[in-house]
Image (cartoon, rainbow, N blue to C red; front, side):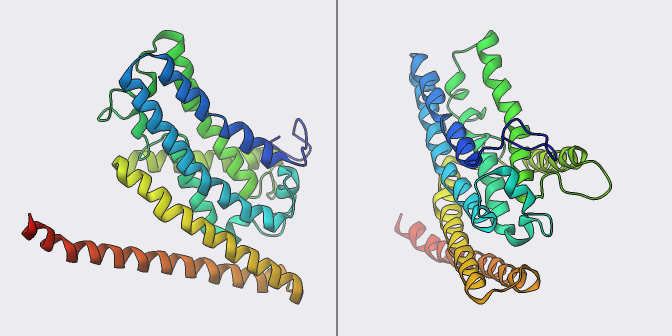
Length: 272
């Protein structure tokens, strides 16, 4: 389904994105079954926590991609890649790309979103009772998924195989390596979140921001269709302005929320 280069794909599904979303969305069932089958209360608690995290971050992850689908007008990853010949979608959807990257890191259980298997949390998560090859299979999936997410991000946002001079598959490999490096870099530098911060970041920040991004993308595309605006520079300027508005609005909401928390802290301490 994922095109590695021009003509280098197993099959071009016209519902390629739906296929990827359906397959990746089924990961919650094995995680819950692994914790339940352990007959260990702590493993079951770890599985329930992992499932809650996967479901919470899968919503903004999918919503961030819908904006790309509106731009491409297709669910096929090949058509999406071909639609980025003149301009990569990351330029039109920088906030959507950031939401996709953070949500994917949470889906991958990479730091700072590795609460389900963190050493400081409930034992080691849903796979505490497994050893040998069973334990190796869990970690094989955990270490392979970042490569898969990097390739999907390249196909959706970074132009896929498009690039000058070098062959298409070389550009695809270089871009995937760059995205993988960013994931590893963030995992190594950002401190781990608490479980309440983890869930709050998904439901209070990423989900509303992804909905606003989807709404603005739909409005701009409808306006561009009615007024027959060219992609460059008219639609580009509209998308850049919308993304700047989302960034400024999110920053203001964060500042107001932080100011309210500091204002209420002395009162709560005095009351206690």
